[in-house]
Length: 384
Image (tube, rainbow, N blue to C red; front, side, top):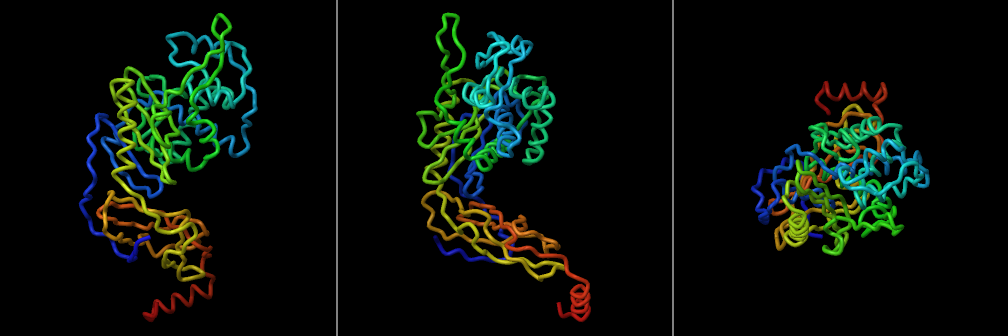
């Protein structure tokens, strides 16, 4: 690790000498999750129809319920005949090939949602979890708000064209992907990146095996997710992720005009992210980075620690040392709980800015009566 001087000052604005990427996608976004540094963005806040990338939120809601013990992967869902009629046949888009009245587990429905992008699987799963698809969509939008996807909304569980009820941004899709990977790593590993899924039979009784449309499968080292999307309205899009040597990137491209163009552009974009940028460890999880002043607390300050391993990203080949400041709006107000995100470490590495979270290292209660009197006395006489 290089020498990292710390200061409690604002970092001056520096023009980022970013590596250049000439992409074909009209909308693109790339972020390094280890450092939180956005490596590239192009119209990343433009609202667009999500197409089947909306199914990432359908899966995310299910993952949250499974993780909390409110949903069992072995739970059986029954395919409503009306749902089957609506989401079967060529006009219904991608399908898992469910049958009317069929009993199918949540686990297999999730494979149907994630691997083969089944519109039938997404609807059946939504109805099984929430009673109706509309009720499930409310959960999707609640989750979007919780994750800070401020420019996105969902109108159905599939990403089916709905006259603008469903709209997302590339930045928000990146946030959703990052949250899924970070919060539910075991479920992510299980359901994303699978090469193919078999369900249903042909009229002659032959099992139906469908490949994953993820363009990273067998094409990109470390590629393991996430979800493609395509409609006539939205064009071809993809939210993808890959990991190499512990460094994970998440990318979004949208608005491409062909299946093959989406595949080649996605791989080229991600390779550029790994090759044109480097990420360097700074502090390990739990390391005390500094402290922050506290107003009217049981203590006048609180330690600031790394909630996870912290790293900085910078253009490949840079030989400059990073500079960092601790930034917070202060003094902080008590009470403060250990683990609360109360400050940020802002790292400037050759013009590349990484903003990394810092959390309180201990509880700080509100000052008691006598301490408040003493603090007031010190302030009155200029002793504070």
